[in-house]
Image 1 (cartoon, rainbow, N blue to C red):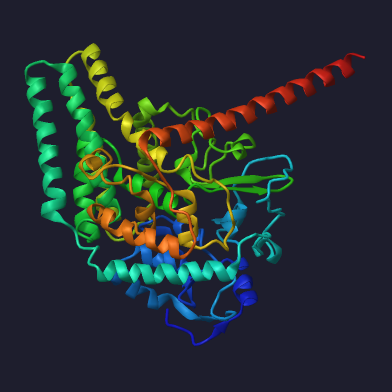
Image 2: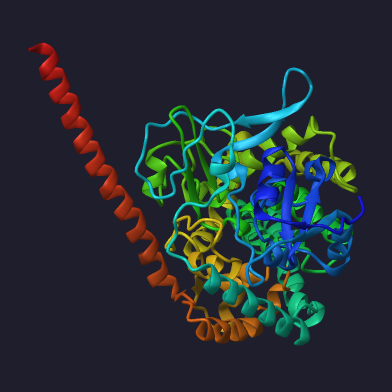
Length: 505
């Protein structure tokens, strides 16, 4: 579709969104994303739907290479009318639980996919009716200043240019990945040799450590942060994640993009009939772990689109990854709307997973022992992941909040000396990684120096914790939520007893 030389007002954009169009603002231009592309977007449709009616310039630039950005021109339908160059955001329909689906007559219509919830006084409450209307696209009151958020955004763009000019997007193949490949080969060889001598436990431990280390490179590949070529990165990722690790890199990318864009936020949407919980799938760990009291009201996840299963504790977290990965692959088996490369990559992932599970180790007792030991060894990885987020804010500040403000508010670094950074895979520098997700992992430490300068200049907090103190912060959050849950239980128990006593009388 060609560009239309038209300036769109905020009201006109809102009307077109309610009519079912997917409109996103980028560099004060209005992009109309066709349904065909929304269905096959490599980063998942949610990554786009969460920014309908909003200025997604920073997010789009952070996640896409120059080649992809050049293709956006075909989606431009005009410019947007702004106040002093600042677009006043709308609330994306999906944040109020609304999505477009095929109805019985074959036409797309608005559908609310949330679950029942009694009225609540939560600050992020947005009332819904039978279908969204203009009032539902208006952001709720916020303490944030649109001008301040625009200032943060402008400074972030300047920071991004500094990162590019410093050559930090160049991958360090020799000094970065060289030592890592040597470490992978050593662990793989140690596991194989130990197994050949029937040292089952030692072999399982080495295999678990190999998985622990490989996941960091798979993470880079999923972000196109190694070769920066989708096909090459995806092929290598499938080899490491599916064939060697038994997981699905396709699921991880789909999940992880939503995590980055909606990092740690819990969005509650209310109606007399329905509600919806989103947005970050990486903080939905009920019934074992609740890191926000918002989870007391509903168990529905807008990402997983199901009432969440009993999450296995961190020591067996890898089994949960299997469940989510295979559910994703099964769902994609019936979805023929795929982007270029989507079909062959799905088949290759399925073959990889089957190959992984065909590797046996003798009797059932030996197999179970090997399975449990190797998987428990990977548990530190899950501890590392929660340290960078669980202690941070889960509050949804609405669409007014800028990309850099949200990432710094919801993410923290784990302080670690350079010689031990391999244990964290270099991803202990989560603040910088969340601001620049495509940045090669081995350049994060150098880039973090620039990010800290940026945070200081913009009067933003750059959070850092040590490994021990970080665990304490996470435990304090869990304890705080548990104490509130205890109070809720006491009140509910008392109300039940009073109701029963009245009934008896």
